[in-house]
Every structure is written in C-alpha cells, then in structure tokens.
Image 1 (cartoon, helix red, strand yellow):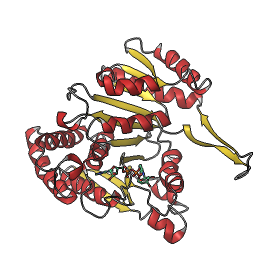
Image 2: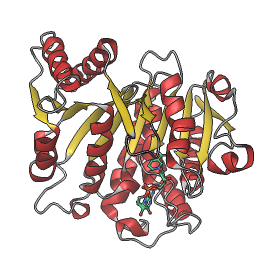
Image 3: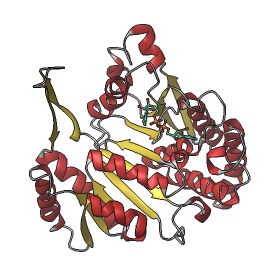
Image 4: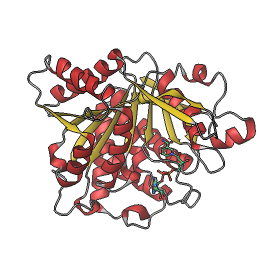
Length: 362
Ligand SMILES: NC(=O)c1ccc[n+]([C@@H]2O[C@H](COP(=O)([O-])OP(=O)(O)OC[C@H]3O[C@@H](n4cnc5c(N)ncnc54)[C@H](O)[C@@H]3O)[C@@H](O)[C@H]2O)c1
C-alpha cells in the first residue's frame, strides 16, 4: 500500500470550489485501487486569512508544508488584497522556497470546436511549455526610489543565473529526447541584450549534448504570431518565467480557455514538495455561483499522479477529461454547457470508473 500525504490550499474565490472536485477524484481512485491511499491536510491560507491575520500564510507555513508529498492549490487573490501581496506572500513564496524551478504547462486542444483558430485540429495544437519558475523576470529584485516625486525611478531586475538557466534548459532537452519531440526555445535576445543573449548562449551550449533533438529558437514576438498562425510548429517549448506565464495564457486562449489549463510546479529532485494547481486565478466574477469549471484542477490531479509515479492513473484521468470534453454533455458554461461544478465532478468520477476498467489501470 502506498500512501501520499497531500497539503490542500484551496485559497480564494473559485479555488475551494475546484479543489473540492479534484479531491473527490483522488478519493474515488483510492476506492478503486486498494494499493493506493491519500491523506489530506487542509490549510486555510489565502486572502480571507490575510484580512483576519495580516498574513497570507502562517509564519512557519513553509515548515508546515515541507514534509508533504505534494501541495494541491486552488487559486489565490481577491479584491481587497493587492495582487502583488497575495501572489508574493503565498504562491511565489512556496514556488521559491521549495525550489519548484520547473513549471509544466501542457497546451492541448481536446475538442476542435473549442479553438477560435479556423481549421486547426487536435493534431495541430498539442505541446508542452516548460517555464523557468524560480528566477528570471520574477526574481523579485529591484527597487523604487523617490516614490511619488518627479524623479521617481523603479527598477525590476531580471535574474538569470547559470545554474538556473542550465537546469531548466537541460530539463527541457531531456523531456524532448524522452518523448522524441522537437524543442523550441523562446527568448528575446535582440532587445534584452544581457539576459536573453545569455539564455540563447546556454541553449546552444546545452544543445551540443543533445544532437538528436531538433531545436528551434524564436523571439517571443514571432513565437506569439506562430502560436496563433502555426501552433503545429511547437512540441516542447522552453522559456523564461515571464514569457512562459504570458504564452501559456495564449495557449489557454487557443484551446478552450482557462477552465482547461493546468500547471505543475515541480522540484524534480524531490528535495521539497511539488505543487499542483490550475493556471487560472480565483475568478471573483463567478465565485460562489457554482459554475466554475473544475477540469483544469482535475487535470492537475493527473499531473500529480504522474509525479507520484502512478502514471496509469494519471493517464486514466487525462483520458477521461478528453472523453468528457469530446462528448460535450456535461460541461460548465465557459465551455458552452450548463452544468454545475459539482455535477461535472460527479459525472467525471462515473466516467473515470469506466475508463479505468477499459484501460485496465488496476
Ligand atoms: N495561480 C493563481 O492563484 C492566480 C493566477 C492568476 C490570477 N490570480 C488572481 O486571481 C484574481 C483574478 O484574476 P483574473 O480575473 O485576472 O484571472 P482569473 O483566471 O481568475 O479569471 C479570468 C477569467 O477567466 C474566467 N475563469 C477563470 N477560471 C475559470 C474556471 N475554472 N471556470 C470558468 N471560468 C474561469 C473568469 O471567470 C474570468 O472571466 C486576481 O486576484 C489575480 O491576482 C491568481
């Protein structure tokens, strides 16, 4: 019997609504597979906690999380708390302190009807973005001088260390090699004449170790054009923290929206827990209405299961997502349906049971 200890941070807005559905899926798997069990510990951290205590998480929060096998997070951020506080004092703090330097964001079209791109099919849009997740433009380095005065100056410094750049690029090359896919690096060496020139040099250096991997390199502006006009060019993509953040929202835009976009924050060495979360935020505009799409959060569960080495279950969850989005019977309003969050979750579990039997996962 394998047991995995999972820390739950449902967070704000629709975060708790979608995490509830993901946990339902894990509990259903536990019932179907007698060799697997999951224990959950919930932490009430987020903006409500901040408004009560002045803190997004407990002072010793990082220590409290350290011994879990994984963290499952919903979303943070809510009107009334500045976004830079909610992001930096919880989400980015966890990503940094646990050295979750790999952010894995699949961009996969599950149903042709969901893309606004004319004549693009499921075969055309299927790539994995590997985003640097620990430094770069989100290093938090900078200063603000002479606040409010005419001579005010604000500095936001990108930090690209050799260690940080090499390890993410090597991780991406390994992934491309393992899955026999091309690797595309997205940077901006023409304008960012220190950081991105360095990035491009490291791509070339590390690339020498992988002569078998076909490599492409685009400027982020050209890449944005191709993501819309020729998404089939992309298979595995490696890019910096900021560019990865932006192009994966574009990726969500061409595959059905944020309700389907997932992201894993991984510490590959497993020195610290990794964190699994949907890409979307707390969606205050629909929070409490029971219509949030839980599929992105359920997709995070699939990534978590892969990370635990339970790939057969990870695949069963993903196959069930694919079937559900293809069938279109039980979808939330963002995907053109009229189902409620909880009904999508319940229906998902019924379908997962059938998938698990069909692909003989147990
Ligand atoms: N990882 C995170 O926790 C994270 C990510 C992005 C934004 N945020 C925070 O969330 C708050 C709201 O930000 P925002 O509005 O820019 O982004 P958002 O992702 O919360 O919402 C953008 C739009 O997408 C819709 N949407 C998002 N997720 C959906 C889902 N699962 N089902 C159906 N529709 C969905 C929303 O209704 C909204 O119209 C802000 O405080 C922001 O800082 C947090």
